[in-house]
Every structure is written in C-alpha cells, then in structure tokens.
Image 1 (cartoon, rainbow, N blue to C red):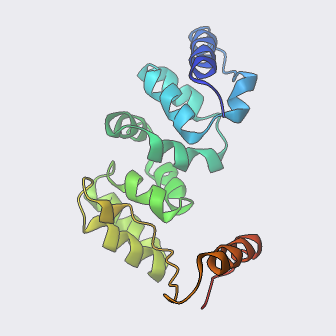
Image 2: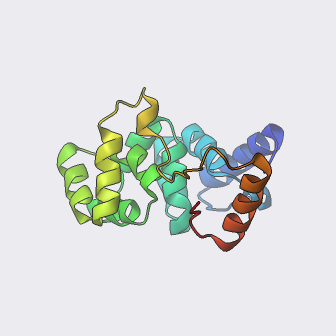
Length: 171
C-alpha cells in the first residue's frame, strides 16, 4: 500500500517516462493496489494509457478495469481487440466481470456470459438484474449460514479455521 503522495509522485514519474517514449514503472508500483493503478490510468492521456496497459501482467488487468471510473474504463476498452476483451473477461472474477460488462456493447457482453460456466453465468445474470446504483449488483454471494445458538467466540474460531483451510463452513 502506498500513500497518496507516493502514488502521485509515481504517477508524475511514470507520465514523464511515457512522454519520452519509455515504458517504465517506478519501484513503488510494486505496492500499488488496483485502485492505485486505476488512479494512474485515469490520469494518463488516451495514447499513453494503452502503451502502459500492454506492459501489465494479465492478473492485474481485470481488477484495475473494475476499479476505474466508467468513462476511463470504456475508453481503455475501446482500444482493446475483441479477443483481448474476451480473454480478460474470462480470466476475471465474477465481481470484476460485472463492472467490466457495463463497458461492453450488449452483443459482446451476452456472448461472454454464454462462455461462462453455469454457476458464474447465473451469478452474473443475477447481478445484472440490479442497476449499478443498487447494492444487489455488488453483493458477494459467498454466504455463511450460522445457527442462532452459536456463540460469537465459536463462530470466530470456526471462521479462522475455515479461512486457513479455505473450505466452506457448515454448521
């Protein structure tokens, strides 16, 4: 995690390098969150966004797109090929994909949804039933059901164990 000052300094350094035709990323960028990267991309001119985008590893792209403002996301995605968009979307988490689909033409979005497995497709369809102003669109569907007789202490212990093992909790 970087401070606002570090992020702004890294952005200005990166902008100078890109204007010189160099694609270089400052050392502090290794600690960037997807929101930090979104800040950088939103501040760059259109032509420089794509130059930097091409240098990012694939695992960073979906979270960054999801964190970007709608107008910046749409602009950046307009520069990508349909195959790039499809690859990006299919490698996304369901939560990120909901954000990304908004920036796509309906025909492409529907085609991508058809390529998802049944569970992901159902989650996306359920999320898209809500407008982007409604909480239901962004709700995490990983729900734990807890019996009302369970104590808080017992629940905390079970959550710690489940998080450690990455297994579902069953009471």
